[in-house]
Image 1: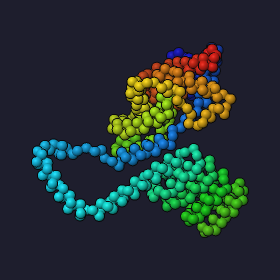
Image 2: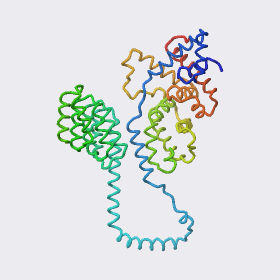
Image 3: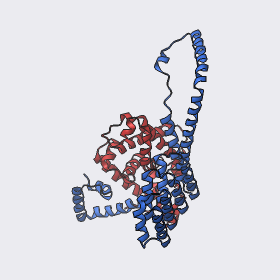
Image 4: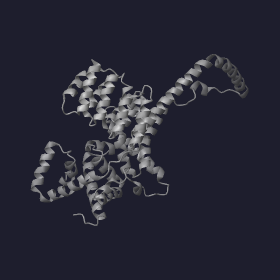
Length: 257
Length: 175
């Protein structure tokens, strides 16, 4: 193996310990190799300046739309027994008439249950549509779009894990305080899930805005999360927190007790 | 992936969430076209679903995924062969409004990008897998179906050529 051909692997930190030791020994003895490593190292690192491109939010929305269609709709295909039937035209007409007449009777009998099924299906479609819109908006660059995304997320009945994860991501990582405040409200509605309650509690020390911290304390009181008492006590005594936050934590402790 | 394989198609969403961004960046490096790369990402994930039964659980999933991506890209290029070329490389624009303009080295970033797109496709492919996708040489060898030694040689040559092209674009002579 040519030593030069090991340079990219060396720069990527992919040589095994023994290969690395051998390569570095060569490096200290071979000035031409050393020069080449330095030139390529500089260039290798310069490649980090290329922007890290992000796909658009629309791509995610399209993917979930298609996945939803795939998971809900079975592939249309004629049953084998039907395909093997080879009926004459007159037989086909007779069969159609029989099926039509049966359809009227059966249709009357099952009409009401079908309507309720359709309503349930429509509700499910609306729910999925809201989820798709929420996820798509939460991924946008504009803060107002993300705010709207949180609002759509809060309108989803029984949201999927993905929506609650996106709302938690907004709470913990969004750069805009208003988006974080809105996500507290949205997540409060999902607090029947113990994981969400824990995440709300865990989020308080990570927030840099006292406003968001206070909103989180209010949410914990609202959902009556007594598991949060220990954390609130800690906050009320920690001088690193804003005095208003500590005061609110004190108030929260009283309410929860 | 094994859950997808046994018919839990909704779990494809987990794989999508984990891999769609690196996959998009890989395809963007290959195509130079954002819209085409997004379409290809979609295509790759639905191929994963379609061919899930052929996935061997002992095999690394990223290796299998990148093989699918290369095949999808190959099919895309084959379909495009009859079309009038539109110099896709020119179309690769950052989704962020030229953040490099904020830096004094904006010109270098542009040259780097240009040099990368001037590389022959096989060289660009191996370099992107190694430098930007952080794959190990053993994984790259399995994706490209070649020896690890071949990957080493190809990455080195691609990196050298990229540097030379970059220096030429800058009006310098590569040492």
